[in-house]
Image 1: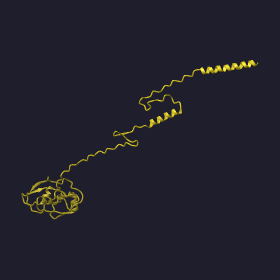
Image 2: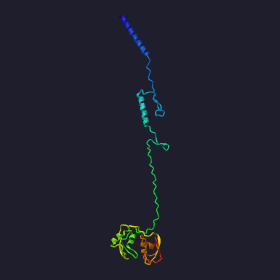
Image 3: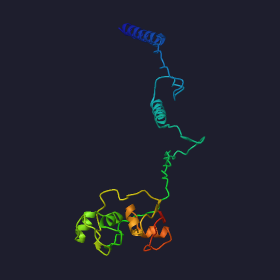
Image 4: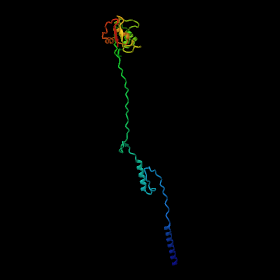
Length: 229
């Protein structure tokens, strides 16, 4: 019985040794072949990690490099010099020079009419004048002048008749009866500076007198030449 137990113990011991030797001689499993993903040589990561991340340190390295790549922004260049990181390129608006139209200022002709607002409130007719003549001269409506003066149309009123001059309105037709500047030759001894002014319509008798160096009430002679401005 003692021999049987001893034999069993030896047999168990030899079996265990055989199992250990067999385990030591068994080859390790071949690790899988690592195939790196091709990386563009122009990429930010020019050198890939040798293998897939095998530790938390490798994972942290990849995460850090990715964050750096996302934040990398080319520094703007101003005039060949790198601008500071805080520099902000603000386009300067170009304010164009707006050309100003230059209006040719023509030399104003000598005004022979009465400016608006300087009409007299009344006017007394002189020799050779009539209501329509005064309406042309002061640029008022002749019908309004007659109504305001209590006069009628078609009547020849004598010198000394007082007219009431409207302060609004305008003459309905062309006020100038003859072109001027020009000259005028007196044809009748009855003509006066006032009557000559009425022949041109829109000119003041005093203006004619001043341009001829005579009095506005001067007597005219037949054949006398007057300068009409």
